[in-house]
Image (cartoon, rainbow, N blue to C red; front, side, top):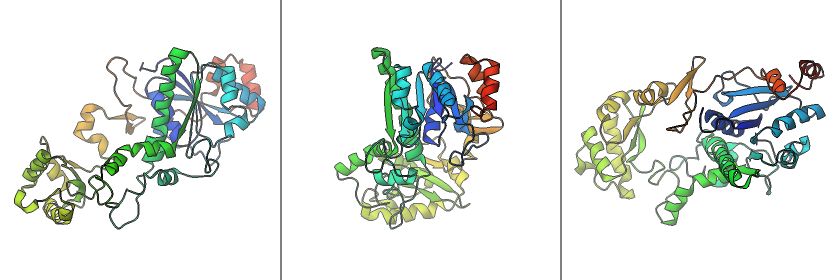
Length: 378
């Protein structure tokens, strides 16, 4: 089930972006086999019930051994896609680089994700999401005026600009393969991906509509009509009443006289207008404001924490979250009208599918027992 049903993916175990890309492919129906190390290191922690491990089989292989490498290459021979997130040169040294894999399977789409890219002055240096988005220009604009930049979790580099764009690149290469019959390498970089996510901001800058400094522009919390406000119970609501008709609806919900907040589009008036809104919003609780705004175009919504989001009525109605092994987690997205993906399956125990996968590759049980004894598989 799902638009990628029948697609075979090999995932070399790694951190956030590559597993997220593999999860997206698995959510769409692909058969994903995760290849883990026989003896996992602390640099790739395993989390019980991790959503980034759902809907796939999981095997343990010593990829540094000749027999272990051969197992992976036999998987590659039958695969459509390989996904890896190691530093440049690591898979090449393992004998599992693009040339090794494409020589065994010329139709393979080899998807790789790094922070800096496969080459360039920083390619071989360590980093994390915060480093990549700092260089791409995505981090500096985020935060309050006069304060330091605020990391937006690791959403921009690892997930949005990393894993999501890697998955999109893989699917684009699969479309091209349907015409040419040939695979290729998809080189995704979190610097480049997070830079791409700032395209809209660059458009505003080019028009002279952005550039007043951090936290002082229309979409970065600088404008009073696009910000969060504290409520009477110490929680928050989000206000996004940019257009005039939505601003009018907001003032109606807040019972604010429009004359007291004139000049809302003038940045010189933003401090004064924000003070009026803040004073009013502090008079009621978050949920009281949410109830008053419900069914209107006021663009006022409650700021929910992650534990609250699954039970919000809209998310319940849309099935935005699913429950696996008693734990809520985001459902696959987007939706498909005809090739509807199956509900995700709960993560399996690490390396628990090794025998099943090896049997599918044609290994006899006696071979599997020997490989296990020799430490080639786990």
